[in-house]
Structure formats: structure tokens, C-alpha cells
Length: 125
Image (cartoon, rainbow, N blue to C red; front, side):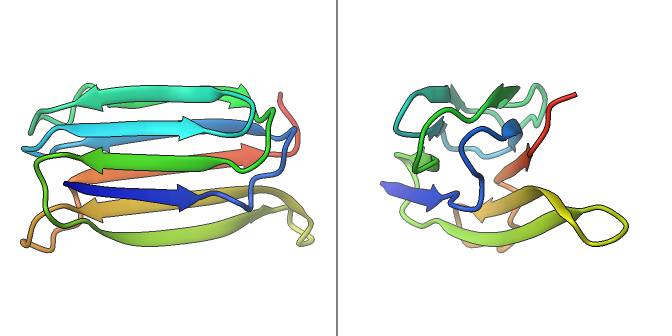
């Protein structure tokens, strides 16, 4: 069983967050986004067809210690490419944050088995 938990510590409480998660893995993928206050999504999918997405949505971050857990009970290995970034105005003021994870769950090194995009902004609307 392969499982990893990612700490999304750059997203402050009170920011407005959106998520989009896809998978085209042959194995079942369980994904859960949560913090100390609530669970934003807890979803599963097993399909090599990327559509529909495993999870998508948006909400205001209400708690602390935002985490994303990916669990693939049939896989013995899980590796990830992680990219974080700031969303800035034209003068460099940070107005949000982004977090992208591409996961490899076997050994073909294509990093397309699970793709996660998380974005948080200081303001909604």
C-alpha cells in the first residue's frame, strides 16, 4: 500500500481555495483534503479515463494544518513532483498561492497517474 500526506502550509486560514484533481491510474486512488476544522473533499476513483475529475470545488479555508492525503492500496510505490508558487500583482504583492502535485504510482516515470492543482487567494470575488 502506498500513501502520502502533503502539508499545504503556505495556504493561510481565511483564504479562498479551489482544487482540481484528476487521475488516470489503473489502481484505485483515494484522495482527501482536510484541516483541523473540516474535510473539503474525500473522494475515490479507479479508471484509466481521466474524465470525469476525481474532485473539484472551492471553499474558504477555516482551520489550520491543511493537508492532502493520497492513498493507493494496490500500489507499492508513490513518487511525486511538487511545484509551489506565489500569485502576485504586477508590482510583486502576493495575493495568493498555488500548489501542484503530479504523482507516479508505478515505474513508467510518466507522472500522470494523479494530478492535483490547489490554489488559494486572499480575496474571493
